Length: 175
Figure 1 (cartoon, rainbow, N blue to C red):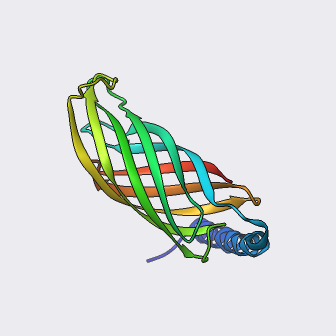
Figure 2 (tube, one colour; figure 1 turned 120 degrees about the vertical axis):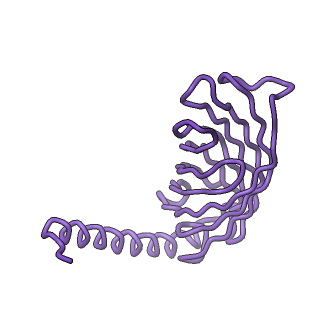
């Protein structure tokens, strides 16, 4: 199988930027370890998530958790469908997050387990009593990028039930 010259340059460029970024994250972690006395983090969340039969729905919410290598927290997300006649969802979960590499909470890879409930309604609104509900369970993998000693961004992917999967981004602050 032949690889084109453009493909080679793209692969080399991506590997270069990943290497530089990993090095910068490790350096930021070392320099911020002593300076960071944070106990909690708070982060708004934006997601594209698959709940219904239609294209991905857009969700927004908030996460609050402890700032440690093993982190506990709460996450709430309100998911609005692209199609007026599909499910609107309110999902409330607790999470257990473990930072894997590089070790620590300043930056690096994390894995997260979530458990909670989801409430469903039709026609782009949540009303009580709801049209239905279910437990929610899932797994998330992401990377925390440090933006100084207090701020961060986290791109992530997740899969579970009652949703099929999702891509998200959170931007938060440590306090």
